[in-house]
Length: 392
Length: 98
Image 1 (cartoon, chains in turn yellow, purple):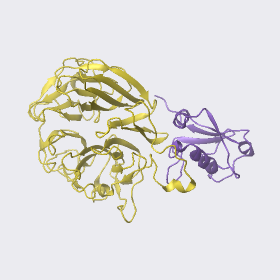
Image 2 (cartoon, helix red, strand yellow; image 1 turned 90 degrees about the vertical axis):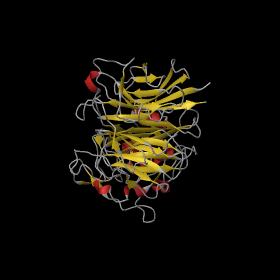
Image 3 (cartoon, rainbow over the protein chains, first blue to last red; image 1 turned 90 degrees about the horizontal axis):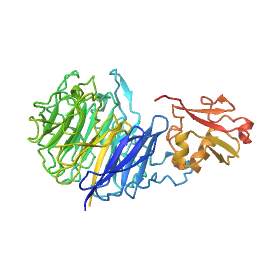
Image 4 (cartoon, rainbow over the protein chains, first blue to last red; image 1 turned 180 degrees about the vertical axis):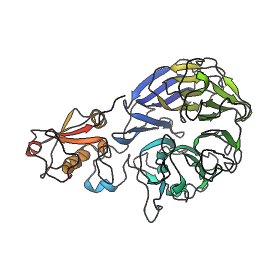
């Protein structure tokens, strides 16, 4: 019988929530890495027991943890290897060093700081880990300040895919309120050389050659808060989602506006339609119904809590424009939490399970495509990310 | 034997108690202590000093005999009390509420 495993990253540790296919009775384990910020945990599609976790702290920096047994035990990849003095310049599991080498790197430009002045690239943390679709030892990391790294040895060492940061528009990137983060990585199951990424606040980018070269894909985005609202880069993209069964059809929650692209990001058009507010962070696509999309509208860019104090997931069954509020089982008064960009996920069962976590520490589950909801847990630390694994 | 006191989260990361003991060749300095610490406990690499620049992370301080050595040269010999093990070398995290 199938089961599901939720990987929940919070401000104060990671939690693993498991249930059978009914998804109505849950077992909670954690906190793992208690006291640390767990920005993201994600399992390998090629080996579901292989899970990667991004563990970070303003005090102690970045740690990468790896599990080979579905999250029961964790190791720091290669953390048991005793280094010598000569090893300090060599790769390490938590060593994210921008590539400035003459052979493979790109000149390390500046990006824009909040005040518009040039600012050097400084590594801060890993926001998102995206394991390869086919190789458990290959995993991508989206980091702040924005760049993408790849490991091919199970996270024991990391190398920047420098073509992204160095392709030319880097000096025009700027941080969003949460920092200049690369938060979205989508791998194309139909084309191993194609990857989409998104950066706040730079926009969406795509490579078609396995990461050697990248190009901005922001045509159709309109952001009135930047000097040129239709600029090639500078847009605050909050999240992008794709149903893997339909590669190339993308849905985007921008700072303001919900958009879709039917041509792999070449052109976007707005599908906010009748949403009560089109500001938000999360967006996801039903795993069985590729035109069914979920968002959680947030009051505004200044008021980061759900609209009108009501927790409402909005669902479109028409690929956007026509949205319905999903409220059954969700608090409809005095609710002032946020749902952050990586804190929604869908499973592969039918009906589709939809999950999201809030900054108030609730993790909600729908086991019926979003028609009804229940809280799996109420009182976790602020939830940063939610990923679900569907297990055979 | 050099004694090193670590903050809570680094103790957990290295799976050690509140204090660790290290063999450090003379001269005993911040650099030689931290090199020995990271060599003995690789999980601590990058958590106290930057991997490349070897600079102290901003929210950490080094105290010796109740004196802040954070801004001293990493190669300045530490007091005999540390070299003899009478006093520990202390790695302390900045205090923060919430």
